[in-house]
Amino acid sequence: MVFIKIDILTLFPNFFEGFLNESIIKRAIAKKIVEINIINFRKYSPLPNKQVDDTPYGGGAGMLLRCEPIFLALDALRTKDSHVVLLSPEGATYNELKAKELREYKHLIIICGHYEGFDERIKSVVDEIISIGDYILTGGEIAAMAITDSVVRLIPGVINAESLLSESFNNNLLDYPQYTKPAEYRGLKVPEILLSGHHQNIAEYRKLEQIKKTKELRPDLMEDNDE
Image 1 (cartoon, one colour):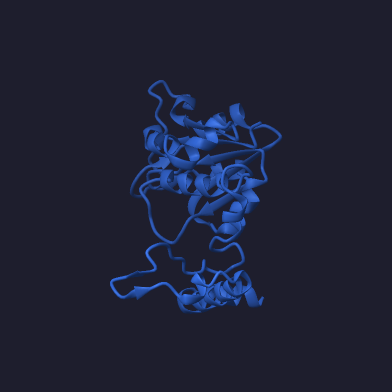
Image 2: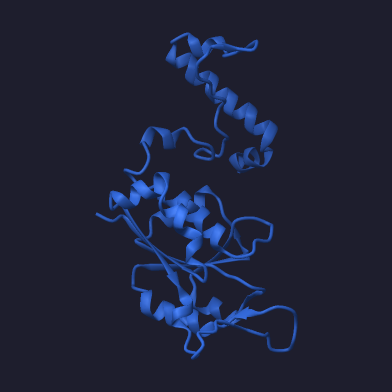
């Protein structure tokens, strides 16, 4: 049974070939846990030449996405279960909490922007605007893949539940340091406590290491914990 359907609207569907055919995403699709559709919204352009962009009214550099292809695409795809996300630098910054929120929807529609931006009227038909960080990308395709990956891996049956619990950001802390064989390599030793077999002591050590690591590398997360 499909847990979530994700439709990604893009002008460059070939961007997603490797993404859909490797690793966790590929397995989730094969298990029919998730359905991911890559849709070239150029086909929804009402213009004879299928143009999707144009110069901005009032002048300015670059080209803007016209509103008609997006409106018409959403007319065709949207249902009562849909949640529409527009990717833009002006959106709220994406994080693990938002990934968990998006996982709860039955149908996500993600719109990849391109060019210099989009007609402002497109905002009137989306449910939220998301940014994956304060930097500029050529288009929204990389952001769409990041969001899709982070949502899909939270779906039951995609990843081992125990693995999810121990990952970074699950409790607003970074993951604890981890080691595997050999126990010593080039003078670098695995902490003795991890070799002790004492599970309670190991759990306590790992929690302290999480806090220490987060304070050093991401003190902003510790501030969030205090709120």
